[in-house]
Image 1: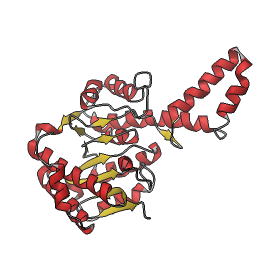
Image 2: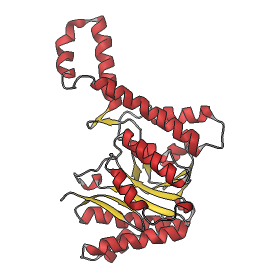
Image 3: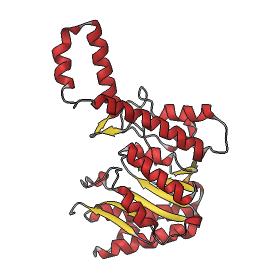
Image 4: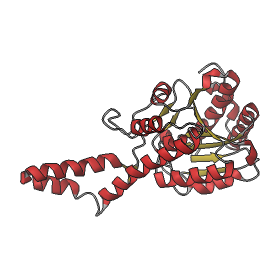
Length: 295
């Protein structure tokens, strides 16, 4: 993605003093804000660095977004940098509702690397998604207690079908399904349905609010929550695929100044996650909310 925002250059700037990480991130948030003339909020999780504390999208994140909102000019709109493995669709719904209300739907999402699962859902609540050639979205199959909801539903459906035709494997299925608590499959079914409904709602009301194209929106919903071709929850959907299914995607590489600013900020965030105990960063130019593995 070009020569700007080189990882080693940003690494050298951080030096060896932990307090400098905050200053470097702040510098590059301000640079990106000047480049795009919009508010910038970063939501970054350290799951790739094997961090443990609060790496997923959850209800506690609302505190971080509320903190990041203090002191910013809400009339400028929001550019949200996302790097997340996903998480709770209910928490994603709350975050999106809050951001839409604060910024009157003037939201753009930037995915410098990965925004998976519920991160992809949040991306669908934007006017456009900025991606690079190596950026990835993912299937929106929600996770229930760390398990893909669709897999849970499929397992129960397979057991039901097989036992209706032949109950000789009753003991096998009884043992296999006993790992789930009561009503777990209903919870998983509801989570899958909620994901579909939220994506359709946000695409209709935000990304494609000026279009009357329900067929296009349903194709996107189906593609993002389709499992025969995606196979696994963690499958990466690159920018070309996102464009092909109909999402409004803009390429970061099309604007060199914007690309350099995005990459510099991205690297400063990733270096912080790599070299400090921070496991999640929710940050604007005014405030930072940092979750640590030491907490």
